Image 1 (cartoon, rainbow over the protein chains, first blue to last red):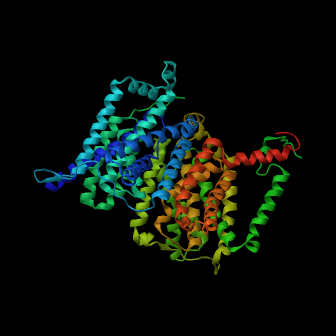
Image 2 (cartoon, chains in turn blue, orange):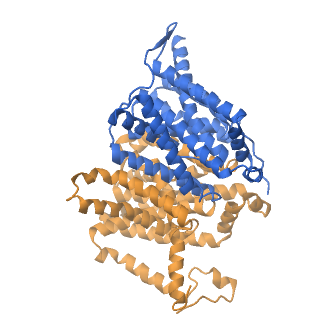
Image 3 (tube, rainbow over the protein chains, first blue to last red):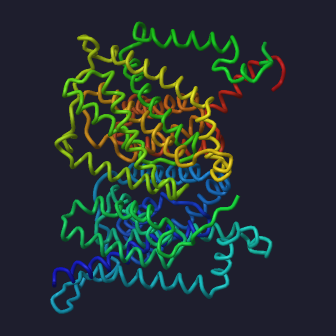
Length: 290
Length: 346
């Protein structure tokens, strides 16, 4: 029983960080319709920049974190302008391949600059573990969850109440009408990419400071597709709920079926959902018209 | 100077080689290709074999993704299925002219299963479904040790033809390019038939196609089955060519490589598949060559080849998508038109 509780708590807390990656993905998909296969690499690049700033330039961790956020936002802006805007309106496969191409460029550059070694970036958060009854929760896991929860709540409030957030939602639901009403949709797209890049960076820094940093880091993000599909690709709330569920399922499967199941459980979940309920738990059910 | 081809009937326009000039060029090229083992160097021959295998696989993916518009990220895994099938049956002593079709058929069967979600979902959802299928197949390759040999890999016995053992690149070259020619012409002919037109109709607007009487279920599954069949055959000859294979070869990067080849070559065109496969095979080689020659000035350049290859790969995909979405075929057509219309301006 204790074992089950421990796996569940760890899984749920781990799910919080998965939710950040999922959020980075859903933000882009929801407002621009682009499926970003480069999420993992953005995450990794952010984490490497954080490492480089804090170790090579010896600045305090929080400053390094801010620097890496700034650089990633700038890069996201650049990519949106030079690659994604010219490709708007192209078939899905073209845009998807463009993000894969970006992922490849980032992955290659990271390997060329930092090599294949594993680094240990400095922790942003204190590492004191927390004991609840007999269950021990590592401090990093708890801290990561807290930051993720804070950030996600912030985003939900931003989209719900702020003027810019409403403008972003309007652009997502109908770009043409939004443009007629005076919303700058190019700005909306740019802002979306910057936000998504920043969220990815936060996820990358949080995960890497507890799990270490190597070029294999990005592949962790691929299993996030399971969460996104489960929650519905265009629903932020869905992504969060599904990430928590996925974290729980993954942790339980790894605990009881062995670590190897981690490779395959998310994908079995994906296939099952796509066949049974393709629009996910919270996604919009689209009706096709001619 | 040939300013254009004048068609008098629809039938002549539909012909495989619609002008005498293209027929002669094709013949000359084929002769040149099949005498390559006589004049080419060892390196060129090995490269040609690899390109031939890539061409077969790319032709298949171009049918699924280019013609029918169904994104498949599990193409690399289908190659693996073909390769392991050949390894399994080859060890039982089945000759290659049976193992290769069997490999194709088993891959096609799996393609149909992987394609099943395509009936309910499309576009990006389908891409993710095939991604999931890819990882599940990869898991099977690693864990089903009795058939695939697990992470240690499997060895594939040499192909035999009536007691004659195909060893070395030269013998395999003829096997590979015989298949390239057969499967290439088959793909081209498919494009002219009812099936090819149905595939294109499904790509352009699947609901309209269904209203016009195209059986959506059958066409989508057929597109997956055809693509996977080509991949299975390509995987089979890959096995014969290398002689041994590990599951690492069939990583996600292989699927992405073929998607890139399709995009760089030109979606929905047989010529594009060929151009794309050649181009994408030569670029990393060229990069390696540059690295080798510059190694005397930059001693640690060897470690940079692989990462830089990834960067170049990504740049190529994005450059083609942004500046030449129709791929190398479009460039080829433009060049050809210049020569046709010379001395007039195009």
